Length: 385
Image: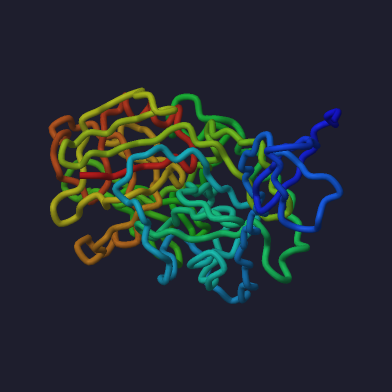
């Protein structure tokens, strides 16, 4: 009897290859009776295709309009702790708001505050340290070791809102500082008048900062009896300074992603500051850190911006303002409790290698020039023991 072409049949996840045949070796398959018997030649198991379950993206609930806005003086509580505060792993992305954004305590959770485009004249870029479908977890300014969640998709009434056009006052900040000098003329920045008059300037070390008229201060050095003075100053804008866009547009969500290439790692016990770019060491310096009663706060933070300084002890160079604030404000003099931690030059070499400051990081002038030339807003700073 002639053989007919092979045929295939799938039964319960198995594929049987059979040919029409007659005589011995014939096997009858289950199911409806076949017109002709089939001889089994081969069989192999095939995987059953399963349709992947859809990824659930928690929706953002509309944020009340009266939520507090994160500013230089503080942020509301209720945000979760950073899950990896001691990590020194590189953070490659920063989130730059294009408008005021609601910040939540969890993906799909409760909105607790607004994150503005700028804080006291400093353009905001916050490092992205966590990702969940439809959400980005970012380090928050003015609140140590806390993470806020920002949705990809605006909530409720904000969905049709388009990012506002950037005002000319922000666009003029594009010029990148060339040497870190704080003369008030270079770098495309326009400092305010020396005595801050409540217009949101960033006051420098030792400044008596207040919400009403003191500007914004770093954790400063007491200046009485030392032959030098640190006063309330204006600010220098700190837009990106070399941060690169990832090419990911805002797509109506109100923020964009900025590529972060640099990171600073401060080893407190070793009194050493290390600068990395794309994971490769670019510089390392012996520095001074906070004293025992006023330690430099541990954990992950970031460069919020930069400010000018006055006084020879700072070598005439700008300071980098960090997002970190004192862990124990009561340990500081009243005039310093509203300040932020900073990184600044220090002309007295005897301080390096010791824990002597009010929380700021003091480093040699040459090192500060290097950091000012290369680091941008949002640069992660890892403070570890």
